[in-house]
Amino acid sequence: MILVLDASAFFAGLEPLALQKRAYTVPEVMEELKEEYRQLKARLAQESGLLEVRTPREKYMQLVKKAAEKTGDVAQLSRADMAVLALALEFASQGEEVTIVTDDYAVQNVAKLLKLRFSPVMEQGIRRRFRWYKRCVGCGRRYSASYASDTCEVCGAKVKARVKKR
Image (cartoon, rainbow, N blue to C red; front, side):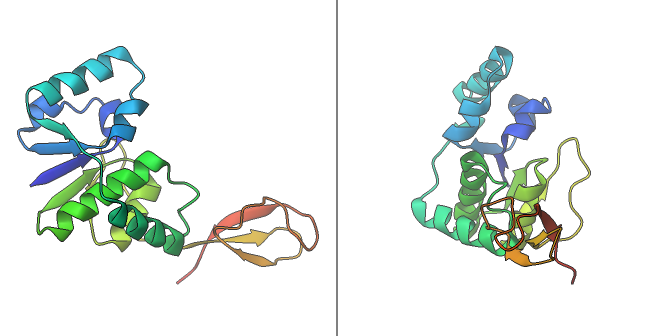
């Protein structure tokens, strides 16, 4: 089994040296590790061969972006989040058993759509997949989740994200 680690795995204190499984992450996650002791732990895991830093192919980044647009999570996902999902998707497409280690709900939501397994570290994790849209609090006009403005183009009131009911 392969583990793909999001930054939240490192922030939660997950020890790559203790995993005894193949673990991967992406360069963007390594850049998010600002504290010296987290960087040191990640480098030690890398040097011991238990953690590999790999960049996913662009093809998988595009597939993740499309999936995130579908769920409405594209605005919440950082480049690092998308790269973690893309790397997991790339491994899964090669027939590998993959689990993403993350507490990020947007990552979990997109992973669920892509049929990728995930494991939260400190949080409970999502139980079902969400789809988002935006709605004006004034006139009620609906917008897609990717609508960039936080004000309604019709009445000028605030636009808020909402979960689509199934």
